Length: 489
Ligand code: CS2
View 1: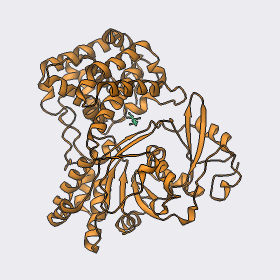
View 2: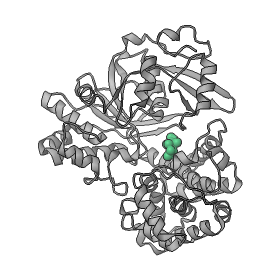
View 3: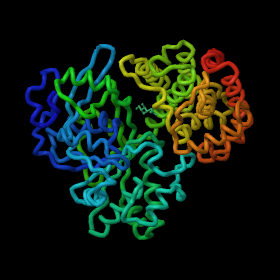
View 4: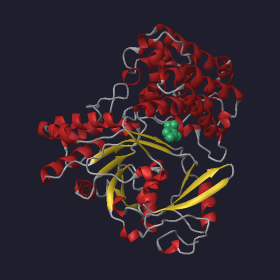
């Protein structure tokens, strides 16, 4: 079968959408760090929609860890297929906004030079929660993170995303070029403020004058990003090739829904994203809080409890009436009261989420969402819990999500089979779990002591500890499906 490429765009089936602009006229204006599936289904698609009107915002992607995206896309001129899928079928679109992918490990200088180039006006990021090298409970830079220690020792050859950004910004300062705008597109609370705090803290450890320069001129608009993008499978590849008649080294599958809310603060300019469906607003934080607590809080709860109950995919887990009731109740009875939006809007948002989770065509693995729990729990579940406890309100369902995580990280499922627990702190989780065995109190105590996850205040709340421990005990005794039924009512 012919490989997808510029030349092979000719002759694609009519149903396949393709770039509506002359690709050779596109120039790079954006560098994107973390060129994974999410970015390629989200921001790259928005940018693709506007390059016809303004070709100055092409994207240069960068992988900080692995060469696999570059290897897959270079032979096809960095084109790829975005397949939008629901129960009614699959629609394919070829995305052309990605002009190149730099593998940072192979060409660190090339990447830094590209970021320092005046043509680059925005550096955006999807490096996942752990890529920020911060303390998830406080949002502060983790100065003891091995990558940060490396980057402080050898600032010109950074390995972390913050180190890369600060070095590129230092080069711009030295050359008299204004800072690029840093746009985080990760699921972190106040992601703009958070990345700004981290970058300035790191710069200050290197060079106070650099930190002052950034304080004065670095713009980091916050964003709320939303689109569900499961990892691509071999079955996806086969289906997509069948539809396009082209071999694609790494197509992406996603849902029809997409949302992007962006704070409008781009001193060096920005693409007209409002013309292609993004919402540009003054203050993103209420949207972010809503999305993290409603969508991602539900997602993580479904992931841990659903995995333990034996469900491989979100759509199967949410088809279980107990899980559906739990998640409906979590959003309605526990999360909504912590959010500033009108109740009716939140109910409509909840109903749309339940439908999106049920999309049977997506095959979103519970295991995928279960990854990196130590980095995700604070903003997804613990924020809701802290706000409610401060008001003296119950947290039964959210606490079950936390207990589900605790049970999951023991690394042994309900049938006694091993769980592949992926987390930057996997080894610590493992040793806490091994020491506790199936003793719920010991396990909960051991995990509550992880300050970077739970902070210092939450673990002191006796009622919360007891609720989580009781749920955890039940998860050990009767399993996830039965515990969920009991708690969901
Ligand atoms: C998911 C998110 O993997 C996860 O942790 O909860 O990637 C989720 O699918 C997106 O945030 C949806 O916008």
